[in-house]
Amino acid sequence: MGPVRFLCVDPGGKRMGLAVGDDVTGVVSPFDIVPYRGVAQAAASIAATANRISAEWVVVGLPALADGSTGSAARRSYQLADELRNLGVQVAMQSE
Image 1 (cartoon, rainbow, N blue to C red):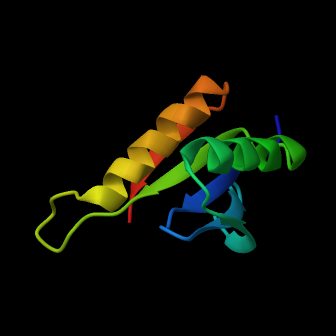
Image 2 (spheres, rainbow, N blue to C red):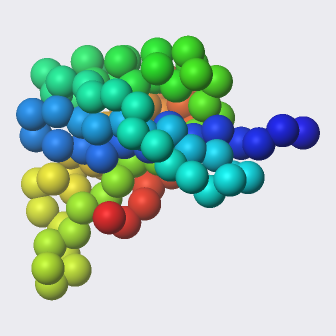
């Protein structure tokens, strides 16, 4: 069995940064930027990218406020994760 490849998503309000990594090297490298035009469109683009690069997991960043609570950015992350799961993508959330 080879390395497990991850597509990591840094969600933003205008664009989402993508990075690629694997569980063997532990190295994560910048990969692409997806414009944010709504959750469904972003999820479809991310799912297509994950499929294209054979990523087994998509890791969605979960931003927190300074006091540890979550706000609108975290809600967007959860919505994105739900939409990706609806598309059949394995998703993990990672605190940023």
